[in-house]
Length: 418
Image 1 (cartoon, helix red, strand yellow):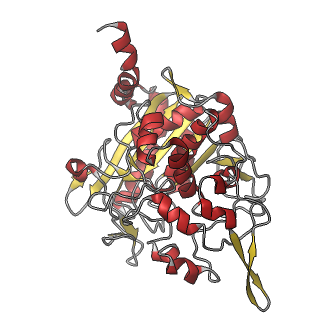
Image 2 (cartoon, rainbow, N blue to C red):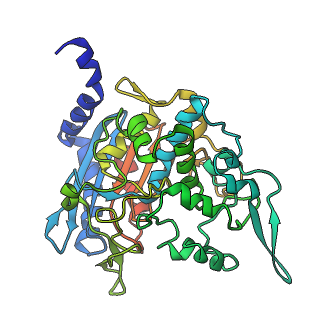
Image 3 (cartoon, rainbow, N blue to C red):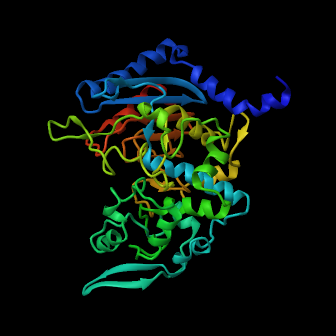
């Protein structure tokens, strides 16, 4: 193998090395405390609160805990495995935000640039204000910017509020689009959908509140407009490809369909997990769907190993195994609270794509400076730079009526926290 070939294969070699590292290398004392994680997650499986789960914990880039529990598809008798695929829903937002930041660094997008520069309908954005005598539609006080979208401070929701719900449903958005964020069944490109979104009144003025909604789907369209490439291709070129994330994509290859975990939901029988229905509110269209809409806010499929590799790149200042995706400055922006108290007074903030921990105790045992988020199907992640931890929990439970996530993080910290 010549030197050029070796350097081209560094990301792939690194990914293989990560997959070959095992938990057996842990010190015995650490393994003893990690047994609490085993008991917790196996207990949820045994009680039938979840069908199964995958867990991966890295510390300073090294796997210190990786296990699979239960079933990826209980009815089909398929056990959970390290390469099981999961719908990660809103965990897509971090990857799309990283994609936007690569364009910012290339000078193709400005952080404070008006969204209307990319999507014309946003030049005439309006807000639906609830007043004593009804609803009043007013123009936005200032243009909505890329910064507003990254921080969820644009005033754009998922269109489920009572005073705007009918307007969104009339345009096949909001509650009409599955759970609001779901677009995998759409037969049009995401930019067509976002152009329509810009014609519907939003719920708050930009910069005045933290409003969770279609913000990152709009960013996905901006990626397409600024790069001249479909979002899936750009993400593959700039992020998942260089990082060797071969199991992260918007739609599951047909040949890999049996690797996709089934979706369950918390049922009415003592909270036991029941198989979710087909369609947009359950299993989704990630294998046999139209494959037309690349949802930057909630569309990706991934594995615990792949997503942990992306997070390790962020934890490490934009680089992992010699592959640089973002500059340290861009990562610092993304993982620092940019909206003050708009997120709420509880010690949590929001950066450019990540929730931030600004007070110890605001997110369990997470250190100040930690960041993370999760997805509607039950997946969750957290990065704690003080402890060197990257923690990923993958399951498929929607709606999720359990308390598995906070309890899981508690057991991780008692085993590996510093």
